[in-house]
Amino acid sequence: MYSLYLNENPLKFCGTSVSKERTPFNIVGIPLDQTVTFRSGTRFAPTRIREVSANIELYSFRVHVDFENILAYDMGDLCLVPGDLKASLDRIELLAREVFSENRFTIFMGGEHLITYPIVKSLPQNTKVIIFDAHFDLRNEYLNSKLNHACVTRRIVEHVSPKNVMIIGVRAACSEEVDFVRKRGINYIPSHIITHESIPEIVKRINKFLMGSEIVYISIDMDVIDPAYAPGVSNPEPEGITPKCLLDILSTILSPNVKGLDIVEVTPPHDVSDITSILASKIIVECFSIMYTRIAKALKVRHRKR
Image (cartoon, rainbow, N blue to C red; front, side, top):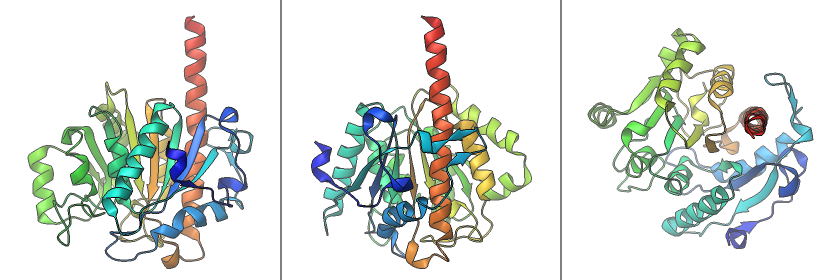
């Protein structure tokens, strides 16, 4: 049914799309840009990320996989409802629910960060959610709206337990959010801690959080990365983490339990020489490549047990 709401984009991720039968991966654009409060333009990100992705190399040195041999089924862009935010969010939730029912690892290209809320709503309430973000996004409302990219994590913890959420790379908050985090026991790792501790120490914390979880969802707000590397985002914040740090963490925590991932808040009109869109496409390629090795390993283990 979700296919009724998809618009085929003439541009494809990495320049081409393969059929579902040839790949275990989906990629889809969700160009929501309705509640951005500072620098709008996230609606242009799915197309721009696709455009630049056709001009990067696809071999992953992290896992020694050539993504050109795997690729993804590019579903196109979700057609949203102009002026009706709730209807658009309902449509995103429907898409996510049906995609996850097919048990295919899917990357959602935003669009603003609010898209994460309906995607997580489509998953069971015991889902563990890891959010890479410069901001807590835990205000109860912002500008008289509870459905806002500044409130997305607050809405998420109304669906899953606050203790099932971890925010990584945070460095910007208001006192309301800090109080909420302390009262509800939300897990978080500030960016300055990541800078001072080793990646294995950070991963140890994350793995402790993930212990016993069967369903995991990951959200990457590109403002988690320092604006020196990713200037083209809606709300840039200094003292961010590096792309290497993000990818080193992802290469350790990605597993078959991760059902999907989004990459959000890329804002091409405010980018410099497309470096943020290029970085986003590189992150997507690396995530697909890493997941391919994890899925292949899991299949080998299952085969041995038979």
